[in-house]
Amino acid sequence: MLKIEKLCCNYKQIIALSDVSLHINRGEMISLIGANGAGKTTLLRAISGLQNPKSGNIYFENKNITKLESHDVAKLGIAQIPEGRGLFSILSVEENLRLGAYIRDDNEIELDIEKIYSQFPILKEKSKEYAGTLSGGQQQMVAVGRALMSRPKLLLLDEPSMGLAPIIVEEIFEAIKILRDSGTTIFIVEQNAFLALSVTDRAYVLENGRIVMSGNSVELLEDEGVKEAYLGA
Image (tube, rainbow, N blue to C red; front, side):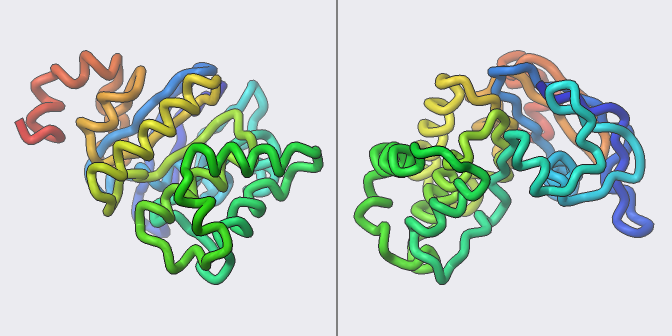
């Protein structure tokens, strides 16, 4: 579904990504792990059309999307939940959810909103409240729901566990797994390596802008180098 070939991205003179190549098959749940500053968010931004690569190519369903604007990438079926959630704080929970469906013109938007509310009942209770007044965990639920409202083929998640209590992280990841089981392809950037490797099929390890390791998530969990660098073992 997604193929990245020798992608390079710079911020002025700083190299953020260097010759990054990876692929994601339809229906897979893939993680990208690495330390802060490794280039994980830059990669997601490049896929979403928010970061212009210096060189290399990004293909989605065999279409070269490297130079596409972000709104055109979204129309192809790619949705991103950004680090920090990126909600419209002075809009209500429901207004934020409806914005996720801005590219749709079908008559099932109300049905999908109810699906979100059934998955996260607290959001129905707070549907008329400003998104900015919610707790961090509730805001992440809104961010997930807003992305789902676009009915994405590929969902990109940037640090979904950041700053959340363990019980909320468990709830968020349970929703992500349900989404994967329904057929959505998922790419997770996550600093919590143990969590990421515990729920995904395969993983890539990014260090200083380069992919240094990849493989089956279960096998990477047992790798001594990964344990030492990312699992505190």
